[in-house]
Image (tube, rainbow, N blue to C red; front, side, top):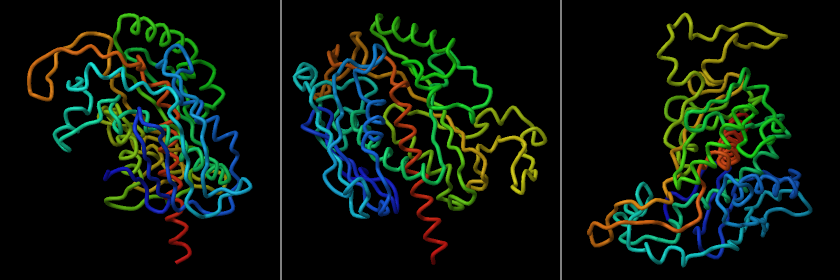
Length: 361
């Protein structure tokens, strides 16, 4: 299927369907001789896997990764890396009753119109199950970025109308994020978020929210002018994640409430380095990283599948109703955090490789 690949020099291709035998990813262009810790790879998968807490879907998948090629004696070979993830708890029979009906706000109808056929087993390729492959690839990219002192931290910023109070995003650590099951570094907000998600789940409904992400210690000069700006690449990567409906970087939409004199990031010299006194640009100016931390936010819609009967239309164009039985997250935001981090890592490693290629040439 066209559109299953992402990246330029560090390029990934994902494969598999939600309720098929397996999903996976092929990584082409990964540089050689980097140490890869398989335990840390699995830890990243465990952060995203379903059934890990009471606020997530109860589909039970271990998401144990199987590396088929490209890594030998814990080192990258420079050859294509292929990773397989078996689907152990797939239940396609859950969808028999609705296989000819279009689920509201899902991709069933659009896939049907585009291809003349669609995988009704949880959406097939359109399912968020596919993102496990992205996390596997991103976990390798993150380990390589770590050798360059680049760290990526995502966390839950908002769920429905509950906001986390974050004074300085650049000081948030992974430990802060993983202290609770909603992955919110504000413990008071986290408690309210968890309660709201569980209550909404009991009602058979769902919630949306915002993931904020900080990319620390990014070198100056990443990104291309005009069409391939760094924030444009980040936006594309984030908007490719299922359920994402919005992206903003730095001050984002709140910039409209400021005058130029209030919004401009003033340059200063700090210990022989050029920095800015504020970071309304979010670490990117003119499409190129300026050395400040990259900070952006991603908005996720409420989970489309809810435990309520809804009106819809079937493949014959007849009006009907639908009440899906599948297992789904009442709010995707907590599990989306490692996905946002993974896609960020893929964008940054790709741009680093392109920048290094320019220096060589």
